[in-house]
Length: 298
Length: 272
Image (cartoon, rainbow over all chains, first blue to last red):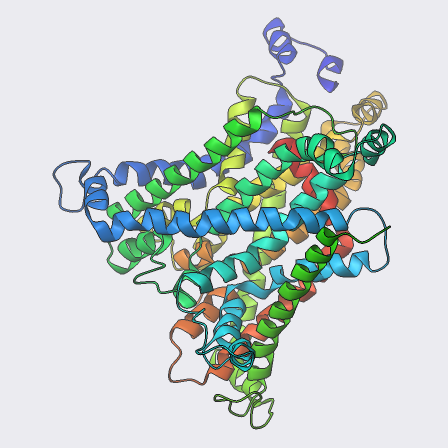
């Protein structure tokens, strides 16, 4: 370490350096100031603002209003009902596809690029596309009707439209994460099991899955965060006043449309709380899993 | 190897997903070139005029300039703040390091809306919202931690002996940074910058909450165009969306040349 190379001028400095405190830590100052000023301070400001309701009175009034107003309280379930299935689907669907993508084969790079392209679409193009493609006169419903259906499937301006949008934008991330965790597992472990006579199913259940599970937990958390903060697509392809009135819409509308920043902050804080609870549960479950070396590059 | 049903099912589901995706993108691209398109398989005629009208009506040159300025400012500032922080976090063990690590992880883990609304409130209080400054500041919140997160493993893999050797040869700290570390870190900085660039151009929520009429980036004005449609034809919004996707695609292709996506995420694992 460079610390031991510096000539200690005072014993205090020497003792601090042994704990790792020396001049290098000055480099942390800009970063720490930044994160405190632009993240910690606004967050705490929002927290205390949420206890100062616009009309005065009971400091918990905003939270009481949130849970007693059915239209607002319902947003929690609406958001979870969209975010959890979307994250779960994205993680589960990327496992078999990532499995097929292991090893080398022709066109692997092209296929990976193809799977990652939806990142570039952005929510608006996805929304416009979903409205046009799945709409009542869109290509999907034309084929659907030609196949003998009685009436066009209703897939836009409701729950399904938003769910599709979340899958299209969230799947590439889940897939990339899963693929990288999977390629971090040493294939020789599986080969050794095969030599000992383990069947494909046994190898998957007892070797690959336990090594992959902690990574899947992290993938699920990150996918959930992405799906949980759904805002633009819930407005455009959903039914923002009813079925897909998610927490971020409620927070935005109260804060910036109705100018009730206190109530908006309260909803934002509740959003953070719900998200931390879900992530906390998943991460606690993760600690019960095997977390040793996976033998690979990861 | 005998093909098993699971394999067929996987490829089949993937093909179904891809067909739908092509349909979704195809519908938008087709519509952006359509004369008019109502309830038929294909439009009545094709034209490129919507691109020109969208370019003029939505003042896309101004919007793209703002997007570019914001993105570059965010990249430069986040690298300047993030790299020294990542260096200190990678090289030193000090009391309170865990807390600082959590503080740098939270802005990435939190949905932008949760800290975006309090941040917008604070920025409005100090009359900074609605300006370029506010947009840049808001976008820096996830960008700086992202640089720290991607750079820390990069710095950890550089042998400390190299620095010690440079010091033995008489280099001071500044010289070590500029002559020894910086050249070694260029690939990492490049990768982090491109990812921050892609994220900033695509970041909707934070820009939406803090932008004023003259400081909108492309995503936000695209959203505004779509939600205030009605007077203008749908095709204009669609052609604008195609322009957005085209520029994102260029950025992503450039990014994929410098960054191996699977490696990138493996690095995330150590910190997450």
